[in-house]
Amino acid sequence: MNWMRPDSSEAHNPLHGEGHRSRPFCWCTVRAQSPETWCERVSKFDLIVVGGGIAGSAAALRAAQYEHIRVGWLLGDRITTKRSRSQWVANIDNMIGIHDGIVRAKLARSLRGAEFADARSALADGHEHIAARDIVRNTVDRVKESYSDRVTLIKSAATEASAADGGFVLRAEEEEYRARFVVLATGVMDRQPLINRDEGGEAIADASWIFPYANRETVLYCIRCEGHLTSGIPTAVLGHGEGAAQLAMMLHERYQSACSVLTNGEAASWSDDSSRLLQAYGIAVRPEPITGVDGAKGDLQAFVLEGGARIEVRFGLVALGLHRVYNDLARQLGAELADPGAPVDERHVLIDARGATTTPGLFAVGDMVKRADEPVMKQIYTAQEYAVRAIDAIDAQIRTDRRRVTLAELGGAE
Image (cartoon, rainbow, N blue to C red; front, side, top):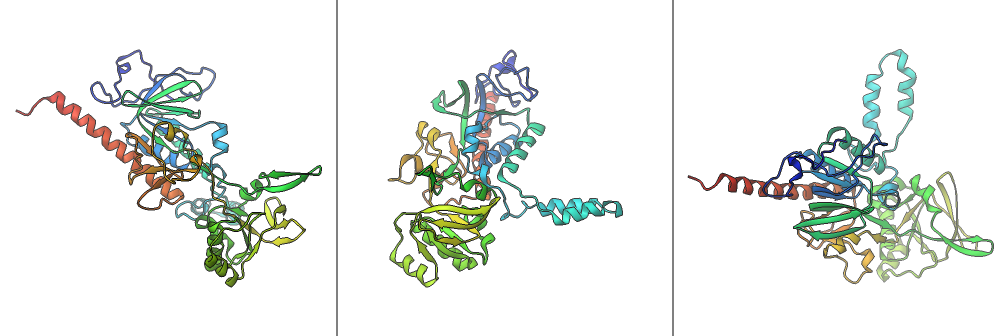
């Protein structure tokens, strides 16, 4: 990365207005032991993007491509990465353009001739999943390679935020980062189904069982993204609310795949109409607690219920809602939240059509947001769209302010 220090005329940097310079800069020091330089002291930017998932990546890349916007991208740390929903999306195959078949076809065309017969055969037989973290990693690499003169990558998690001097101050690992605009893309996390495992005669509620199955896409979270994988294959929905009943009915109606709803010891809370439809569709409702999972290397075979009953399935669809919306920074900056009446750490951040929150200069994108006037889907393409909307709005405001300054410097028309 290339850094400029505040020992030249670039040091005079009102973020907006007189003295603005089109070339980005960063007030920072360099870690001599690392070839990849990360910002360490107080840095000033036009824009700070907070979040290292899909929405944050889309916002950072679009802002970088506009060249005149100086960007600080707070990617987060190991803890925030692990708690990111996108970190656990192991395969994206419901979007055009994101499919390994594109690359395999291009490679096959380049491997012509008898000497490449084995390579072509291996390509034809193989399948490489494209995960959300692959997209993020690729975006970071692109930023490093092509936009390091205007984007500062910061491998830290923002923990505090406040308004200051017509902009914002974010703090991460005792460092401060200032900008006029902030885009939050800090995401959400799903609630996980717990299984009461017997540990030395004591029942321990455990969610870790799910990870190998989620990583192999046999435990799913999104019917829109992954429901097609279940077509004609026995699938259990894990949940007890109206959402679980609706998803089970949708699986049956779209894919003829739902065979049961497992409430895992919780009382079912869906409507009478949903109960009637579940019965009409032949979808069994099992209220017993789940005590075990049978499967090997992430391939799901059955859920074991209290009392020993086995529910033979090949897929599970989690329908328990959200465990957490990471709205802490938005709340610190006074942004209005959606979902009144819900626990505060499950409430989405309210935005408008541009991704703007109720706090001027603060934008939010990705799964953490809601609009009052229409739904915002929790989809990769939706996150990308709103990231572009937010950056376009910020870009327009920065350019408008600079035009105003230029006109003032030119003086009145003769």
